[in-house]
Image 1 (cartoon, rainbow, N blue to C red):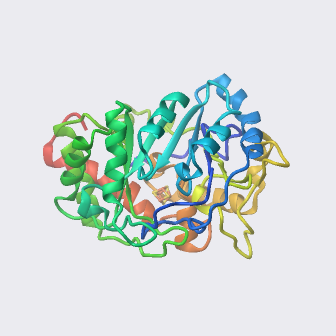
Image 2 (cartoon, rainbow, N blue to C red):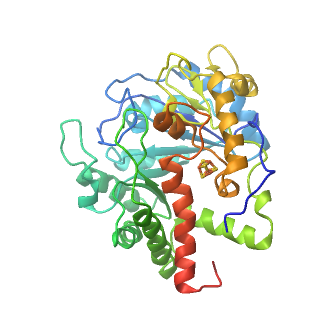
Image 3 (spheres, protein in one colour):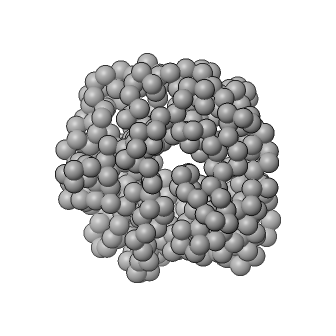
Length: 375
Ligand code: SF4
């Protein structure tokens, strides 16, 4: 099923499909697996940074669907007044999203989301006992506060997505998680196997059969009640369908989406939000420019010349010529290469094994076991 492909994308697109913005570096939680280096500091994005980004984004949004994802830190820790001031420069066509730990969501925040048309994605790892890594700065479990935030969203009838991190995949977990998220009421679910990134240096090497089995079980749980859009499974099924139809090579975009992350101070890191805030003797601060001095559109047009990005593109070409999963994966994951291998031109990482290769193998395992014509 993992069709070898030799064409597909080359280089980086000049126009992204979304921009990630960091309204504050601060997070009110201190999760054990978090990659953010400055999450204890409250460095807020000045409104001038949002105005500069909006100058490039508004024309893109007028020409087609475009999102701004307010990430963090914890974006709601910036406060409603400041977040509203950061949203103000963006035109009405721009879709706004927040990725939040939900602990600060109350009735007032729900009213804010409605007023500003903000879509909400909540980070929660499953039932209470699965959230042991999600703790406050004082080390106390955050689960009750997360649930209170989600309850507020539901009380206001606001649809929301969920993002779960799985640290120890094993039998039974996928079914437990899927049933939990059905009850929680999210309409979209993304599942990440824990990654070695940023200041999280814990190894993400996992038993291959356990990870493949986790994904296979998740497909089974989803197929029994597919009310949730399950991000990873839907990607896989779309790819499997395209391989069977002989159209897999059309699935990858022609060029990598640059996915710029604009940090609190206006500096721009492309492709991997996880690199923002780090420095390296050879790669510097990984930045491609600063929106306070150069328009975002201009920064992205030259992003391919950023030294680490050029090295990464060499790695993507190595993936293209060596990996049978390239047609599905596209060879992304710059930050995973760097944090696992110390450089950008390698190929297979533990992350791509867990989240691409074994995902596809898991979908196939499920199909083999169930002999289903649907997959
Ligand atoms: S990142 Fe990993 S799965 Fe993706 S194309 Fe490269 S080697 Fe293959």
